[in-house]
Amino acid sequence: MTLTGPTSEAADVGSRPRHPGTLRAVAVLVLAVLAAAVPLLGPAAALRGTGEAAAPGAGVMALLRAALFVALCVPLGELFVGRLARTVPGAPPGVPRSWALWAAAAGFLAALGLASVVASGNLVPRGLSGIDVGGLYASREGKLALLEVNAFLIAGLCARSGRPAVQVWPLSAVVAAEALRAHPVTEHSPLVGSGLTLVHLMCAALWAGGLLCVLRTLRHWGPVGPGAALLGLYARVAAVLLAAVSATGVWSTLRRMPSDTVLEQLTDTAYGRALLAKVLLVAVVAALALWARIRLRRAPDPLTACAPARAEVVALGLVVVVSGLLTALPLPIRW
Image 1 (cartoon, rainbow, N blue to C red):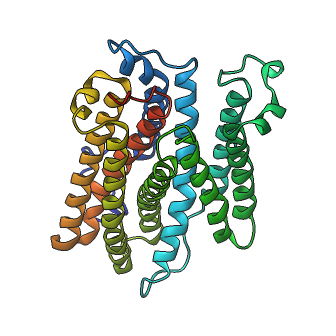
Image 2: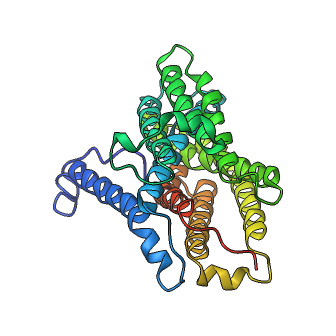
């Protein structure tokens, strides 16, 4: 198996799709609809039977936050894999077309939407008259929302510049702002929680965005030896990223759900249910990553590892979407 399709039109004509490009487009459209439906419809499903109430516009908030997370993953993954690719001996020249500018635009719009919600008293605004832009400067949450808007704008300008690598700084500022936003000063040990979230979000963005960029790079390079080397380099770093994501995720969970109540809250609270769905998806991702690693080491053609890696990208995308949903649900009560 290689990254390119068969060159012979005579082989298995009747058994292959006649328009694979159309099928791929339909698959992408279905995945996009699913990705939008999970955060929009997820709050109602997670809250059913718990006795909890979500904030108004929770679905919209979850969708915007998921879009913001995706906008972080894509450019950070490109920067990460670009650095790895430069260390591969004999790597073909050229890289796939960057999506960083589009990601920055999507992140800017998502951050702008989230800022408008904060400026409307944490309600989805019905019109421009309900948005108090000046009020953003009066609260910690508003300042962080403005920081994210400006950071994505700067990241887009950096992506268009002659030194796109500098966009790592505004993107890191978004990660830091998200970490601070998730842990207000009224929380117990907020700096510890922010630190855990910062590491968790950065490692997750490098993991998901990096794998997407690796697969795009291999498709651009074609079936060449350096492709397997790049995939192997990524796999080694991804193992460390997975360990960091798992450790920080467990620690953060135990800070919000004490160990003696965590099993009950995983099924009886909306946050716990969404978290459980995320954990199961991460387990699927880990299994796919292990499968790809085994193929990479033992298969006659190491690039057959791309098959489970593509499934892993889809699963990671769902993890990112569920993460956006988590931010819109009421936090569990520390019993």
